[in-house]
Length: 335
Image (cartoon, rainbow, N blue to C red; front, side, top):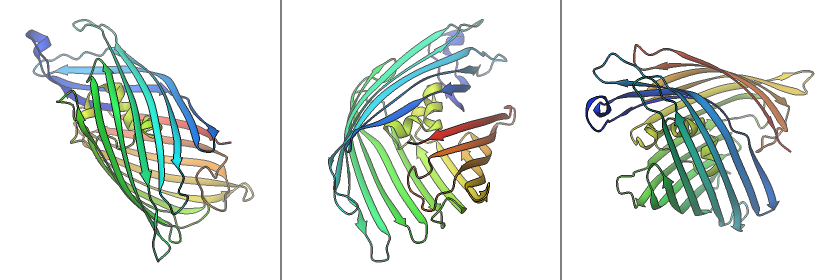
């Protein structure tokens, strides 16, 4: 992952200068989920990351490039308190604990640093599907949680509110959603977190063959929480840089198109595609390739395994920044 931001110094001399910061991180974060009962799931994720930072004080022809590292551990639990099925009211309780530690080495003119943060959450989430006459459905959702932040960043109790509305038309293969998240209050009065995300997807074929298209636009902090947020590369990037995570003005636009073709005597599906992501600071172009077993009806985790390859090119919006390239190989297995 890559990211950039800015910092404001305090004190005299070099320590009081403002400047720009950017960084790159390579990480390994294995995770797992296990169903203790039909209503109770537990999950865990832990891993390490390593890379480097670039700090450039304003008005000086100097750049500091210390090596940086990150360790992260999180565990969580999801319990279904009320099961309303496909058309009734459902209530879920969630709890998770996260710890993150970041370090940077000492270089000439810049001291080493070490930061630790932790967060505990307890939340209730409610959903109520609303079937429509044309076969589509609306699913409003509402989640409220309390959190305790500790460590070297913001500390104290807070309360957050998440709300969303999704629409799904399975006959046409169209779905859309709007999600919002805000920190209602926090003991650290200057701590603010707001996020808004819009998404649209089109997948007309009930199997994993044929065309598919998705579009999303997000503003501010990530609207996902728990495991979904931790597995989001953008969220990992923000925690690694410890800079722009609270930047409510950050925006991200992403679109993706893919097409599934039969392969290997119709037993497998080969899916090439492309993705474009535009943020407030950069733009990323990606070519995708995936191989998975053929499934006749698309459902969550319907494919028992998938092998994918993604090549990306990231360009910063500033003219003098270098172009970054990456290649990601991923294998997923569901059982």
